[in-house]
Image (cartoon, rainbow, N blue to C red; front, top):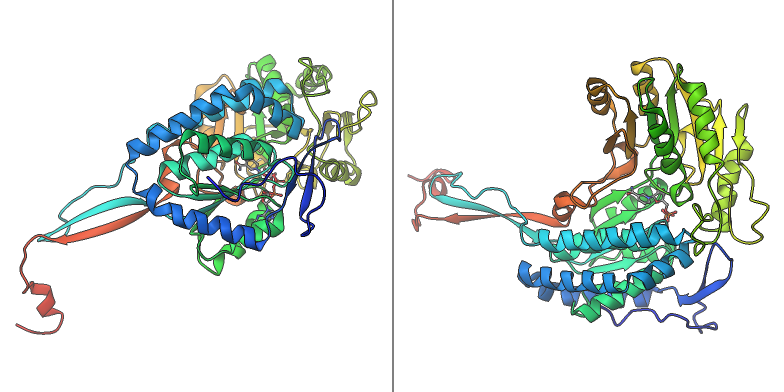
Length: 490
Ligand code: NAD
């Protein structure tokens, strides 16, 4: 890990003026002070990663796996503390961090520790007479990892685990609002025996991100965040032609046919739309319901939505926390203020019983136009639009009619229809009769403007490698035919 690890609870302003306070969005109280990394600190982190790279890359897969397993064990042992810190920093209910994010992150890490040992390269063969060709998968070099604030610890693990398993060293920059658990797991990595310099953490926002992603020694950028930021990163990476892995925004459709198990679909839609206060790139944001069951679905969905309890993360009754910041809440409210000719069935306002925190009530909207920004743009908050459709062709057409392509779901009891629709949907993940679940073995990544490359699965491990072709002469003949024909000799 790192000489550059920022100190927590470093109160007061520094000479550089780079101090940043970290606020709990549920209480609006300061929970930590950290420092943004300036150019000097970023350069120093990258140079530590460069120095550590050959050592880490030359470790056997078994050695790397062993260290990653030790790290996973330490994270698991500390999971109660980490879950609490994650919930404090994001405001999300503790049950979500404790029973969801932490166990999944530990499992992800163990999966990639094992995968390090079974990385496959394509065949070795004598493709040209007298030569043996073999193809190797090699680590790429120091990699910049940039993560968002919605699942800070899990997103850090999704990137660090495959990058390290494949033999790369890293500089990770967590989102400026939520750096705390990334700092903690980086400390645990050092304790687990992962050598200094293999994981480096730099803190800060866009400025730090720009310095990191334009650094010539960084060979690849793996980024999760907004599509607009992804576009900027593509351009920042272009000057030094860096490899890119982009996990960007989403606007998931949720299609319910009239033969679906309706109460399961309603329950799936409530969770899919409002988990993590809708701040989920795969959140179901557009519910397309067959017109025959539309009214019934709306009534039942509304009834279930109204049961959602907002509150503080450490209250076991809390289902939904606040948005991540005052600014993000204003942005979500902006969508609602600009909406025209819609019917807001519930929500759209702040809860009157919570005096602090960036809360917004779960919001259900009818009659949004397909071409309106409510249906086309990622809102990233607890806002969902319900829209009717008349037949399968129309459902597919409406679902595909956005610039994003991350995730979608189809709900039906007709197996052939489920397969037909899943095939027609242009999204990286399509669920049948569910919405949201993922496993360490399953690739997660977007089509279209939701980005390219995969998180999770063996595909993610391969993202962090580059294929090398080694071609060896097997004849020992200095007078190979092509050497002479190329220059016209006999
Ligand atoms: P964001 O794009 O604002 O920020 C993401 C990260 O990029 C942060 O660490 C930020 O500091 C950094 N950053 C900002 N500008 C940068 C620049 N010019 N150069 C380098 N780094 C820069 O996103 P966010 O608001 O933190 O997260 C929400 C977004 O993340 C949503 O769009 C959501 O859909 C997306 N997301 C996608 C996935 C996925 O798997 N596809 C998963 C989670 C979140």
